[in-house]
Length: 146
Image (cartoon, rainbow, N blue to C red; front, side, top):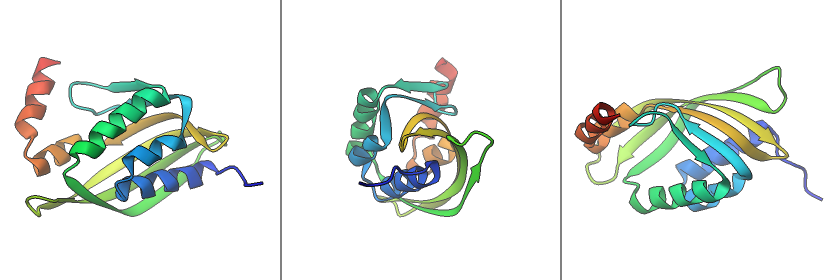
């Protein structure tokens, strides 16, 4: 019988899947009733409820993702709650078409129960990614419309 992944192990599986571009596979790391909040998403905070909704979002990302990612400076901190960790890391990002690169900071607060992510608050640098991909004007429009 296999052991259940710890919150730290679950985060590392998630990070490895994202940097490998396995977006359609990482959804299996989330609970059926997961809640994912993207706090700094353009247009205001996003909220995705349920694995099915998240799978649809990840499928869209996989279809149109123009970036190569690697991670560095990973720090995972335990909290007083054994289900909750805070992960900090940098992505080294390369735009496939232009070759431009940038480093972006990231933080996730994850609640993991029985090896699955039941709640995530994601803090990613969307402005840096928009600047790299040339979509900064669209980001500004979305922010002004919100």
